Length: 452
Image 1 (cartoon, rainbow, N blue to C red):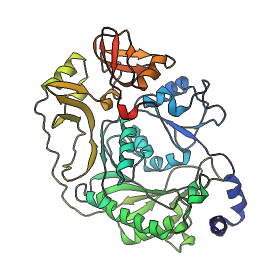
Image 2: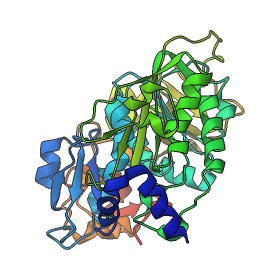
Image 3: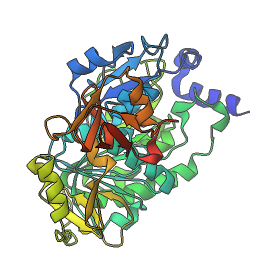
Image 4: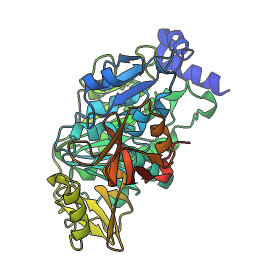
């Protein structure tokens, strides 16, 4: 019954293209990988990775993974030590489109309102290059934990990870952001290739959620700022219909062009909508190598003035033990300013951060570590931001060294390193901490992240 309903719906939209569409669903899923510009450049990535790859046209950092032999070493990308070093993110190719359409620039303040598990947030973070602020939010606590992990793996310093409903953020971030991404909950028709059994024909419940989210986030966008709304569904009710409602409700917004080739234009006639809806875009699986996606880009031409909440109250007392650690191991100056002591947990905060009292946070800035009993223990998050030029006690092993896997599993290993806190690296890329004494490294790799 679901299959028949879906076929009839697509036929009403695509007409003569219907057979091509359904033939595309019989093909294997496209798998993608996106390298992390915060840690590795394109030339190094192509030279270093053992995976067969082909460039994705709409994302310079993105590549298709070959379906035949993921690796020359018969290894899966999600199990390779480079994954644990945060050198890349595994992501469906079309899912890279919304963050590209947002056109984030260094220094921007960006909100990703429905961010888990973190693919689009890590893509945005790499574009920011640890400048500006990235606020990544998800209302589901378990998904927010996964979001925080992926942002941490990428070595992001300027992020705030929240676990809140959008309406709770309206006053805190009133007209604060330059860019906002709304990757909205939807009926998921674009992912139909994965599982037709989970297809939901009822669009209305998602329409309600989509409108509620947009009602909140539009208040958080600056005058002149831009918002990208995306879904992974084909439904006109959740796509052109939502954008038509939005620009009629909030007349300060206009639909603007998306500068990505290969996408199909919007169809205002499907919902008897405004002519500007022709500027929205769809990714159809029979027209490109990726799953289904919808993207709309909107600009806020004028807004209203409402004072933001007060700035964050920084507590920089009791940091002597941390500064001793920073001096002993030659941390660069970027890790010494804007440090906040939250009951012994230390955070490196982004500039111009807002007061977040009464807001459920997973992390604020970069977790540096913990002071307890007058001793500083560095965090896993800090380790993933460091390298040979920013820390002076390194244990560097080749990716084929069996000790790397032992380390990622939490085992004690023998090393040829100086005593003290040593930064464990694979081929020069950081993984985590170990504490060395007489050639034996006690393992401090985060327990929740260990390789199974």
